[in-house]
Length: 434
Image (cartoon, rainbow, N blue to C red; front, side, top):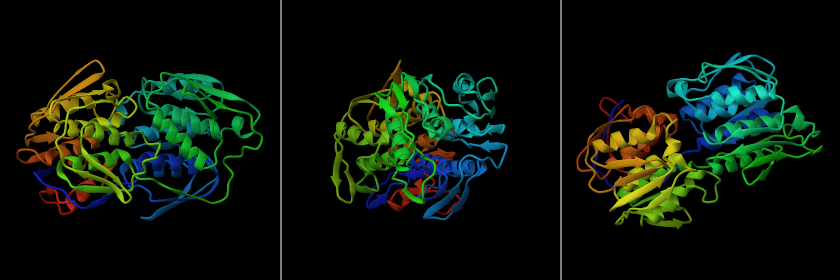
């Protein structure tokens, strides 16, 4: 699907979408905690749907409607020999160790760009936990057979914190921790995206799971606790919070083409991407934190310096913001962009280059030279965040912008185009009615 955006002004109030980071973790916790869980404000992105499908394949019974999902589970008891994670990097990295809690052989697969993402982490780590694994030279499909046995291990956290998230969930639900007979630790070297581990631990705590002691993100110690029976609790309710990753695009859109108010975002959230507020302040954006939400008013934006190492998903909205900043903007953390839905550094340079925005990078630093943004024909590269970044940049461009493969947004924010139009954007869908 292609869409065309004409220069527009936005106004009104908009709710941020549900956080898929929170939603997917809640699905994992609901699977592990035996009993009934009601998840309110559930997301309905493709990644959220993948997580729901996975927990069903691993034994949960799920009843869904628009306002909540009800999960009945008795732990990991696979109902299928294969699970498909779609294009969700979090799902495959989080649910693989969880699936390994079973003694059943399970094949784990995915689609699209996920088939090319490196999974060699599992080849080296899972055998240390008594899990048999076969992979396609470090890529999908994976075939695993447990049961996983929690042990003292040391892992590399430089590629993605999502691998550690999966291990933390699996360890907490393993018999070794559940019986409270052993003190075990996961040592981590060079952990990236630490706030996402904070989110994982926060979800685990809210679900009453055994949570490890965090030793400055270098070691996570599960201590002996005979009273820890984290997976056997009564019915509970979990509310999925608003998504700072999707909300970042709305906030930047408001700063460029507002005034706009964005609600549903928790400033105390453990989500890494709430750092977009810091970036907007550094860029001299017109931003006000109000009781009903965050208000953005267009202002004279200035180039800024920002470290996105721990929040790499912010690169696309940050580039859209920097495109309208006077002078150069530098963003650190380029090395985190290679293994995404696209190689985001190269993709941002290519597509924003078509819009006459110059982007260069040297080692781990990206530089964006702001100025006039021109309308162009660009391509999402089937990457949801690239599609949204180009759309936001198009709002005040000199001329119309057409985004090819615009339906990539379904991965994380399926209502993005509808929401953009509801705020006043001139969004055109040839042959398609919102």
